[in-house]
Length: 230
Image (cartoon, rainbow, N blue to C red; front, side, top):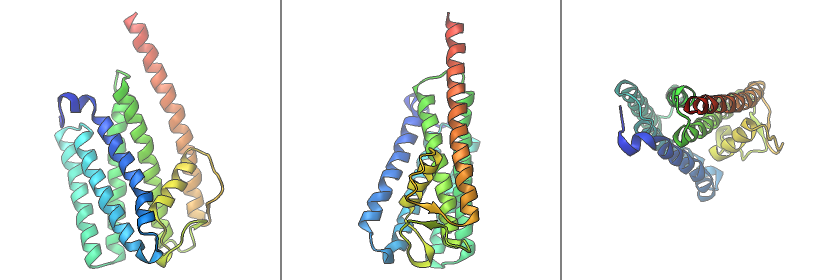
């Protein structure tokens, strides 16, 4: 297994720290590069920071060697696609990079889900893992919204900072994603295209379903463990 000792028992703490650092960095980049003309710089920095998050996740998820290598390959291929796209901008490279990022999020979520829902012992590490999985869900949908905002045939959102080529700041997509995931729905940002609306209500359903399954699963396993101890 990758990671032993304290890392193996606190691996989700480091994953959570990496996720929170990434999320907190997004509005900082927005403020630092407030001009929409500099949006491409922001997008490059966002993807670079996410690549660092991906590398951190590979190391801290405590995976076996086969899964660890798969994660590293996904990170390296994503970095290669991003570098090539920076030198030779093209839609195919951008599409490949989106696919690699989404695959990595799915892969990380699968690794987290195995520990959160299958691990026999409910401890602080499992609880932290459930938080990490929830945050990854929000980032996953934000990435899908980002692709549709740039390459969709219709305007994707109302109420977001629009820039060249229909681009938006990623922190605004994260905000919309987590507001939708938690079913808060302030209404300050609205989905416009049919595909974005479909993704929005699917995310809301997934968020509610996740919380119901998570709470039921953790409580059930806690009672089973208490009964076994008694």
